[in-house]
Image 1 (cartoon, rainbow, N blue to C red):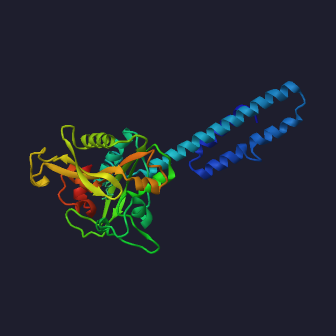
Image 2 (tube, protein in one colour):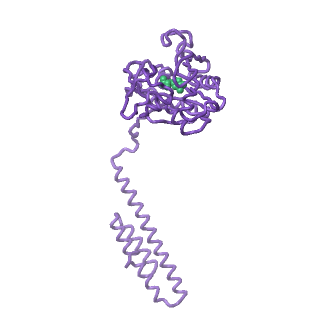
Image 3 (cartoon, rainbow, N blue to C red):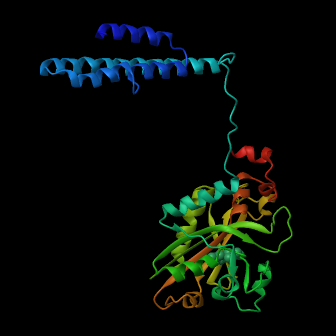
Length: 337
Ligand code: DAH
């Protein structure tokens, strides 16, 4: 058989192929172990003339390439027509099913916003466990065993000195034991209290703790950081106020207020006519707390603060019942898309 008659017969054969089985037969006939092209290759050993051998080799290779190209092209055609077959009766111009877009929960949004403000001020984020030791939750934070401040922190106790943490302040203890000053850390997370659930209380809620420890940290640093934070969160025109308070782990301690976002400080039901909203507790870290974690209080000082995420979310989005944040009713959550 000469070259062009093999070419013609390949063309003829391939045009008759209309399924995968036919394609295999075609491949075997020409390129298989006993295929026509394969036989031609093995016949080359009988050609003695060098030039003739070379020409034969080239010609057979061309046949082989052509065979492979024809097979590949047919394979693609078969695949395409299979796809087209599958779409028969389907109107490809119809719009796709709508994908419902989800959204972040308002508590996640607010926590991320709080985090980002402090990250911009150079703080880093640390997290602690929700099951915490009594030692970290209370003792290391300078709560005496019979202190009345423990009443506010009635919680869920476990065996072996563990409890569900009542605040994120124990992350201070963990972080200060782990790292040496200077420290600039915030600690967001979930906390627990044995509180009855109502419009402004929940037994599970969220806090963001923050603290800074270095040489020469003063109350003015605390005021500067928190004033900037509150202005970023609630608006630049609102004033910040520090009132004396008490926490066992800070001395001096303060409650931090911002002018009422609802009435701009004039007085309204939301702020009980006072013009101020209480946002968080803060203070200079008590020297006992620093000593408890092995930091020299003669050399280092620090400030700390802690706030409730639900309260900030409620003020920011004018939500009047905390339970809405936990019910997960999509009609409520949809509004934060
Ligand atoms: N841990 C306090 C609480 O849950 C909040 C708090 C107050 C944290 C003052 C602080 C602070 O770091 O300095 O009630």
